[in-house]
Image (tube, rainbow, N blue to C red; front, top):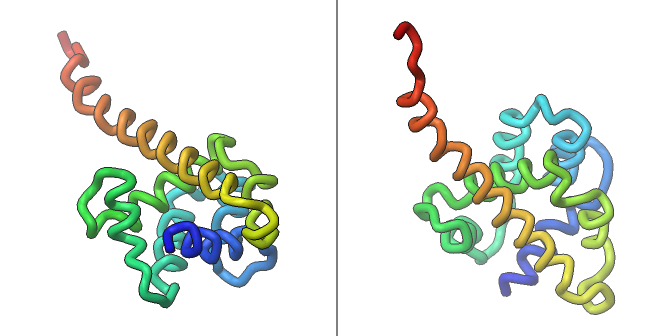
Length: 140
């Protein structure tokens, strides 16, 4: 079920156009990294617009070790980071155009690894911010 959900979700990622779908969001993030925050919000909107029985927020919350309510936000932040950092290429995104029977499951693994690595990188950056502020010897 998880692989099927990701395949459906990311099949849209490979399409072009300007329909406001996740594909457009990822393409915008790749072309305009300065739009990161707007793309994260657009990603969340795209995810929230999806229908179906799969509890994607719970899945991503478990995958990324965040509270369930933050699962969608954490995924969107991480996938945008992965795209901007070059960890998820256009070719890897385009692989989801091919039916899973032909492409296999490797692209799903590639995507999940990129999302996990990007999430850890973002989490590490956030964890460093307080210590940097404490180590500031401004005005001494």
